Length: 262
Ligand code: B12
Image (cartoon, rainbow, N blue to C red; front, side, top):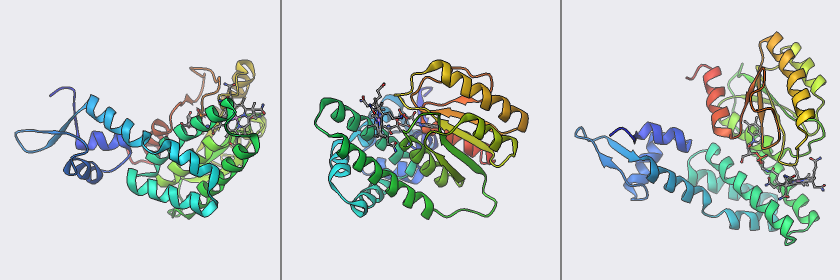
């Protein structure tokens, strides 16, 4: 039974609660075995196959919709995906794939620059509306969200914002192309518990990113503020202070831990 996962463990991987996992098994979508005591157990490989299928399904049609719908159509589709996948975190993972496909279409010349800009902004606004509508408890912990210097790829941050808001965090949106020294000042003022900075795949300036990580790391370490370096850009793999995140799920797990949810 060593490599078998429990319902709760599968839920954590999928970013949903145990009820959604039970529903998937009852619908025959996700195979499981039962222990002598009647508890469900899941083969890791089956879970991976199921989650890949779930998040992969509909990615191309989502990209088509991003290109051709209006703002409300975009929002409606995101809500539908939230209902189908069970959490906003799972929706952000699907959107990560959709954005990668959008990039491929742009590189292949089947999507023009204007189409890509319009679609990106449509998605950005729909995500912002949904994030802002999620209720927050008074005194919710706060995360500052910013793009590294020169970087205009803020959609990764929009995805992070949605998943963080779902986890009960409030957000401060600094957005595109933010100087590290100004972010360091926010840390020194302790205006947020966490500072999360993204660098996109287009950001390959290792030296520049290492300098920014250093400036920010020192300020955060001095002020007791947590630093998260995310996105596919060339951040140092093991920064002297702060953590390098590639995916959104591990960062949200860390945020939940910091908020005392374990
Ligand atoms: C939309 C887009 C744009 C939009 C951005 C709009 C916006 N408001 O964000 C605009 C039009 C501005 C743009 C511009 C450019 N872009 Co562009 N863009 C994209 C596209 C299609 C999607 C980007 C995106 O949001 N990806 C999704 C993010 C979320 O992915 P990610 O960074 O890998 O992050 C993942 C995780 O790491 C995590 N994550 C992200 N941030 C964070 C932060 C934290 C804290 C955590 C925990 C996690 C996390 O979330 C993601 C989950 O899957 C990509 C295609 C692609 N493959 O990504 C190209 C892409 C990144 N762009 C590219 C390029 C070349 C450019 C330009 C240089 C083009 C030009 N000649 O002008 C400029 C650069 C502008 C600049 N100074 O930054 C290339 C980069 C290629 C490379 N490796 O060098 C790509 C890959 C397209 C391609 N296939 O060639 N772009």
